[in-house]
Length: 231
Image (cartoon, rainbow, N blue to C red):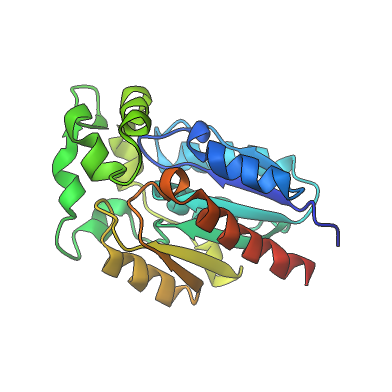
């Protein structure tokens, strides 16, 4: 099988497809065909639908990658999609059937970064700009964090409460990058989700934004998943 397997990247809350820019360049330099989704963050159902439309255009075996909330999206979007041969979770939510981000967050202590999340009057959640750097991207540069905070995409409350259907990780091999300095998703929660999906785990000392501070490690775990397809 050729090396140019498709890779579809799905961003999480408070981000968009451009957050993967450093990782995209690394993967393209290795010959992979890369697509970055722009999901609306309006509901889990809407975000899965957008991702599935992009998957419909993938004619070769595909590695589906999700960051943070994007993990919940790929978990639903890959179900029944024969071209998806591997799932990669980057400090992401690998929800089980019937779970939501809301229900999972209530099973343990709140993450330190959750204190930076603020609702607006229209049903969306934002990260306070003054707290964004520390909460979301502590090991990114000040300029990078400032830009991310400025262009952040609000997260619909409906996305936070949407429940997962049959999870794709029960039938598709999975990889998980645990970020040990993450302030948004506690590392023990990451480890729990990775363990129950029987994922191949790699660990990196990173904030919630490893695509900014540790793009090589992110690209490497994606390549590891892609190499399993070729094998």
